[in-house]
Length: 95
Image 1 (cartoon, one colour):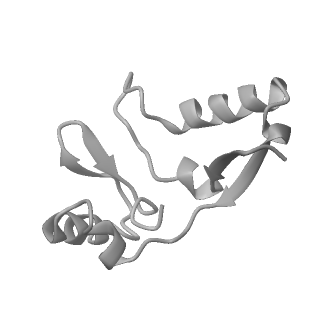
Image 2 (tube, one colour):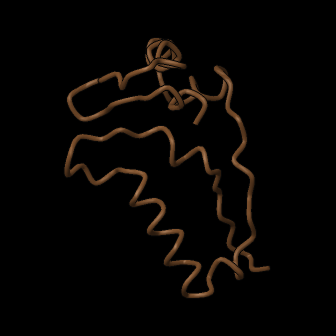
């Protein structure tokens, strides 16, 4: 194992439903991980489990209103637009 860590959880791939052409999409994350694997780099990093952040951790960076807005998307059956460039799905809050 290397000294470089890689934080990853498969749930990262479930929380995005971007508009067509948006660069942040599950396929982008999968492609990066696949490329790291093809280059043998996944064997050289230390895997780090993605810790689950609670409200206290999230609101160190985001406002309580933002946290509440995202929490309200949990389990929705359709994507929710948080702003013109950001959407959330049923799994975004957990991710």
